[in-house]
Amino acid sequence: MHEAPPARATPYHTWDCWYLREPGGPFHVFMLGCQAQHKVAEKHDEHSELGYCTSTDLKEFSPPQWGILRGHGSNESIWTGCTVRDGAQYLMFYTVRQTVPGYWARQVIRLAVSPDLEHWAPVDSFELAPEHLDPEGATSAGARCGDRTIHAWRDPYVFRHAGRWHMLVSARSASQPARRNACVALLVAEGDCRERSNWRLSMPSLVTGYEELDVPLLYLEEGTGAAVMLASLFSGSDYARSMKLGYDPKRNTPGTKYRQDGLLVGFRALSLDQALSGRFVDPERQRVEVGPLARLYAGQVVPELGGAVVGVDLEHGGQKLIPSVFPTLRYVDPESRRR
Image (cartoon, rainbow, N blue to C red; front, top):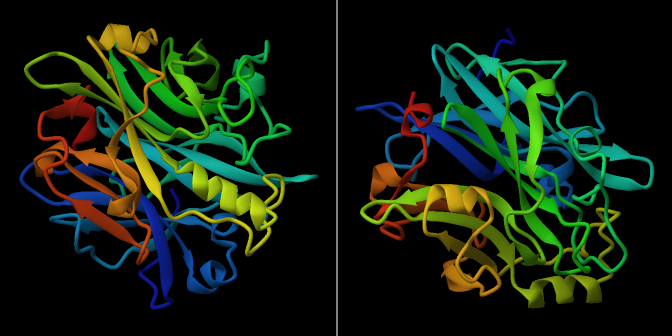
């Protein structure tokens, strides 16, 4: 096991977070962060690591222990993931960003395991990438001409259903045009989810037609049995302004990426099975659940706090909590979502 280093006094910039809740106790929170100078240089995405802290309300947090997970070498950084409990063990599925020739943001999904949420051991043999799971190329594996954003194979959201582990992944559809090719892919594990070979691409695209669909999430609606999938993107004007600044998705050039107006959009299916087969009601009709005035991105629902949403504070940095947004949403698999 890798020993988690003590909390450091070095100022850190933080953004995406996720958590498990201890019944009757605190939230165990995992958040992305980097030393503040990398944010100032607009290179935070290339230097992000994972920190661990606790909170009673997701407003105030204990000093994070940084570096519980880091990339392998200077060409990797940690991006958003998901933590679940599987029996006596905890599993962390997370995104690793890699610099490769000609591109700064290749993405793969990796796994780490822990007995206590503080000390994590990466599973070196585990790596999920489109070339492993999608040999026919239904999901786009790289940035495409005309796109105003980087490609996507990131933000795993993991839950158990019908005895199998499922994973939502922010991806790109190869069959859709540029600027409308963001999709949410569905992976399913046939057997032990710790084994890479057990995962398969079940649905290349549950929903598509958007510029980005980041941090996909899936919940059940209490009382109706409906399933609600949420995902994040920015307004079209943000992407347009970036292009005017000279943004190139293949390069992470400082001063060219403009991201201010975050949106949290929702897709509704009449049941969980319909959601897992991509049968959403009016999926092409953008239903904005949290609009740009909230100045929030990568929002996650917190059923334990009455359906609040916690996400990145686009105005001040760090985390922001908006109360009572989704009071009727519940986890698909509540047992795996608690400490």
